[in-house]
Length: 443
Ligand code: NAD
Image (cartoon, rainbow, N blue to C red; front, side, top):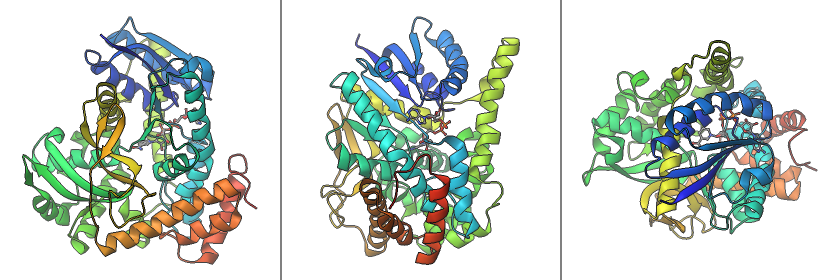
């Protein structure tokens, strides 16, 4: 049986135990010979590894587990790398969220000025990671990347490392499909969807179950309930925090006004930005919710295990996040040609968008990478919105590569969440100050 060396980059992520569990649930199909955790923060990674070691002991005790901060040890002869780095960690995410909110602008991890700030921190560390992998791993190694902000990261990689073997993915569409399946009373695997857009900026246009388009049924449900079933806490812990419940509920406003398609939940930040800001607690944002929730639960479980030898298995979970990345890797490993939504270079797939846009669309995942489907032409409303967002993302990558303050200001001004160039400048200047340690210099 073929076996694989797999490295999780960003091993200190609180998602790592869930991803490892998901990998080991599939060991009969995708057998690991060695599992490595790589991070630049050894202390954080060692803590998370306390739980990971337990998962390995229980599910595949003979598996070799390596923890390292050394890129050569991490990537030597690797077959797969799962990337999930958060540059600046939650401390910087909190600032990404709170600085724009000071000016009554959406404060969010990947959308608006916060997302652009995160992008400027992440572009070069991601390129460095790709270079490590290309230097040490097998030539056939695939990087499957969750690191956000995925659109900006993907655009920078397209320009700087166009031939790298990287699949940029996002769990949001799969999360939506999980909710759609719960609403329709079928398994998620029974859905086949059509979708177009950029990452965190797109629309479901068809939702097939057994060849029948169920979008009309979902539309009627979503108009009243958003994409919620009666008890979301039974569906997935990851998306049952109060802010996620609100997010799935807000879809009802968008579907009511624009019933043609079902939007990605992140569209709320662009199309309902005034409502979002008015309903946000500026002192306690999503970063606080995660630090006091998911992160605390996991680190408390580590402390409890070290003190008592008892493991709280509710401190982490697999969820669609853990399942999806493993599904993609298995399709890459065995040429399964499974259909998933992934981020790819457009190259004509959406006919009336530029060839060099990094778009999120369905693709068949083969061992040579994605074979995207042809989407065709998209209607003017969506095309206009996407072009504006795409321009902001491209300008931001220009700013990073050219060290250009003016391009960064253009990107911030262009973003739909920002009202004026004055406002863009104030937020940009505050973010420059906050990100001194991380951003390329903007002159
Ligand atoms: P986290 O802060 O818990 O973990 C991230 C880890 O990355 C930390 O341990 C940190 O030390 C490490 N790191 C930072 N810079 C690094 C570098 N240069 N090399 C190696 N490791 C580095 O964050 P999290 O909440 O688990 O999220 C991890 C990533 O996954 C983030 O980018 C997040 O936005 C992304 N994410 C994506 C999706 C998606 O569907 N696309 C969903 C959830 C999270």
